[in-house]
Image (tube, rainbow, N blue to C red; front, side, top):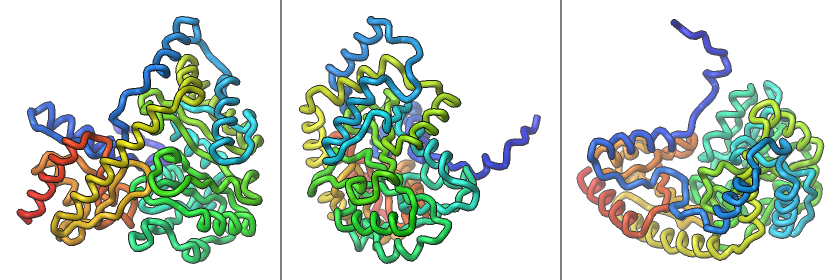
Length: 389
């Protein structure tokens, strides 16, 4: 039977990391040794006190439905913690808890964007931004992130992309896949434009605690931004909880009400007992987070130093997240060719820069959420492959 899919399905993209992971796992099943640098997942275990809180919640019978926007205790804790980190005040009524952070992207873009509305998004950037913009019929307008600007973007160039159809701008800092960040000065300029031109900002701040150089800054704190900013955050990266599927958005209350309706219409609510794990993560000791970030910084320095020793490859030092985004143009390979040859010939799973948009050509993304030992092996294999070219 030929299935006639809705036209909108042709506009829905994917996340290549999961495709490469599946291919790498297949090769492993065939007996190949694969070093995984493709998936954006901390290789640390969820801290014990978080797991114990969720187990206790299960034993206490927290196994049924709960309020669609999240349990009140967690929403309050998120409001308090996020406000403290950003030196602002949030109310729990502005918080919506979702199964992972991706639903916030999907729900917010769906709630705000009509067909033909323009959304400016970072490129290279997280591929789901462009995918969802296209899916709902919006026009995706890329703002290039340039290596010569440490993968920030030129605010004047950004301003030139704004039109009377611009409804939303997506920012991600620290940034996936480049590890770049935005300065307070950049954010202030963007905030002024948002107020002047009257558009919303979806601030993807999911890596806000994995930052090495400087202090984290949020666009929310600038004048005029509380009523037009949606903060996207979650627990997957900070607390090594990717499989728990726990994310949240902080947004104007009127929008939170609409997003809650979308939660009800799609997933009903986020897993009840897991939210007690989230509560323990946010309100409990942060020692494991600090240790993880320190280890990521050690790995960052190690992988960047090693990449810069390989002929034809150069790499900027990431300021946050846990990704290196080396320039491979000197090897003579395209990004996709490098991805394929690294996996097939060297046994190193990496991602083509073009998995993150057209301006990712000439780069690959390497996640250093792996041991120093494995990163060292990967660097040796990458160098051996490049030397054969």
